[in-house]
Length: 223
Image 1: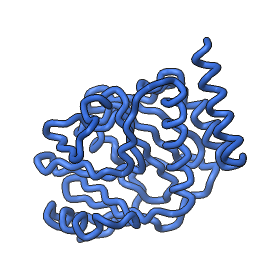
Image 2 (image 1 turned 30 degrees about the vertical axis):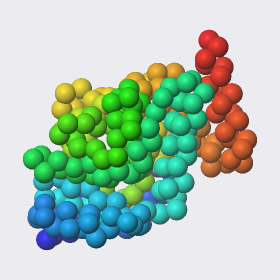
Image 3 (image 1 turned 90 degrees about the vertical axis):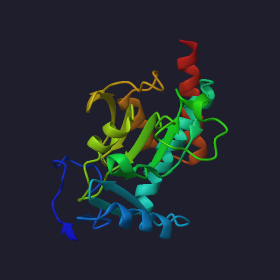
Image 4 (image 1 turned 45 degrees about the horizontal axis):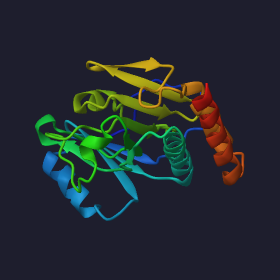
């Protein structure tokens, strides 16, 4: 197996410096090896695995990564609650399809439009069940696997990506993703507002920040 040392995505300016080697990308990995690694780490949250037709990304979760991940997940939960939108936070559930030779563990993901279709289920099978409606990707590393093709093949309709500078919202259109201003699952939320709230989450006391998020949602609901 070969280890990748190249950036897959073009460099973008970061408000936060890229993290040091928190990820490694291996090539020539079999599906069986991927599944054995998942089994070995099924009770551990120390690493995430992404598999794309023989390429395997192993990501070790840092404190900074999880701070941003949890803040965005909390933002979605709080807005959905205030706007009376049902949701299921599926966290970093492993989603995989052997027929496509692809699998991933999102930083966070949510069922919103398809919440009713998976409500009450204990296990999910992407051959019959819908994929999550929102996938959160925190990518502040100097090395990462481009996952958009994988997301498209698995049918993810909406991806939120934070690159250390801003939150981007992408909408699936066929086999491609297009950057959009508004979330489809939470139409009142824009990428600009999401970025602002994420920045404020790192500066404000958590109780103050949550009050501001709730007040903003209530104001939107009154418009």
